[in-house]
Image (cartoon, rainbow, N blue to C red):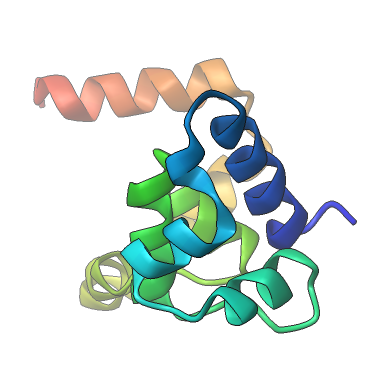
Amino acid sequence: MNGIGPYLRTHRETLKQQDRRYSLRQVAARVGIEPAYLSKIEREEMPPPGEQTLKKLARDLELDADLLLAMAGKISTDLQAIICKRPQLFAQLLRQLKDAPDHALLRVVREITDGDW
């Protein structure tokens, strides 16, 4: 069980050890879902929720939303829109970068962020 459900549960339970506001019921209430539904997600009895719910969970549990979406096999709508504007270029870029080491990817990100074209 290495999926998103156990990941969420482990993280939530860790936070709960320091702060009781991270009980299953309280997190579910803040996110706007039923506690039973969150429990089923954590136990992988239900598929991962949709993008908006995952983003709310990420925000509440102080996790990276893109990571949760990726773990759920999803991609955020803002990234979809970016890719759809230039699908061939992004497909080529991603295929070229798929085996690159992390330090190389970070260098590319830094170059783009710096904007020195």
